[in-house]
Length: 237
Image (tube, rainbow, N blue to C red; front, side, top):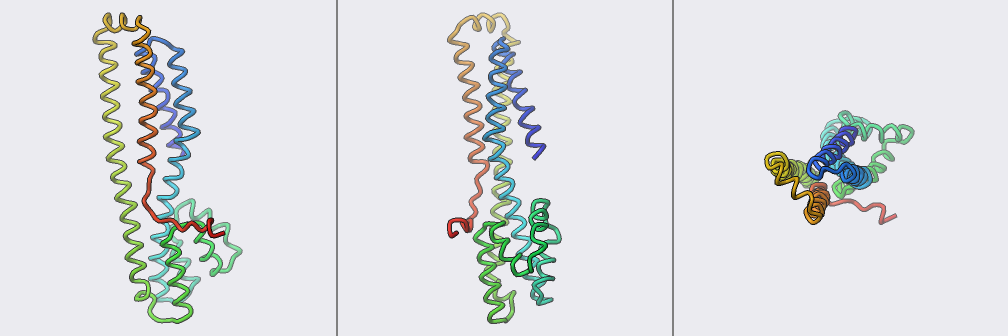
């Protein structure tokens, strides 16, 4: 998440520079610097962090379920299956697992329902319970589960790819818009400086930059959406 903070800081300073160049007013530049920095650190950072966390948990859950079930079908051991499912865990997942070292493997498996908070993992627990009570071929029993798990993984990847594409389009649009504004500032210097003497023009510029911040927020709301069914375990508690 450090890279996200750095990007936010750089974006705030770039916006402040553009505001200064187009308004010739360092006070306006400082105001927008703090507006964007405040917005990014208080709102945007949390939204991005939550999105990345949910996305990573979906990936971890997918890998855990599939590795667990495949190993279980061969070894028929909860301990070995759990180890197999957590071999390539992400950093956050590893940190969570380190807190569970004193638990028996059955309790670890159940506890992860709270960590993943995904409906697909609840489905996994149900299949595992049936297998432990009735026996049988766990791969056959979990066929629909593995199919659903794959659909969740594909949905997350598709959503991510679309989001990156939309982000690229959003950035290109605003970069071109700022380029046009800066071109007017330096390419039509005398005319532009005369317009800066008009208070209404200054107000329109400030509204324009506020609109940029608003549009960035609205874009971020859509960008950080993941249409994945959660478990809502906390509501049951």
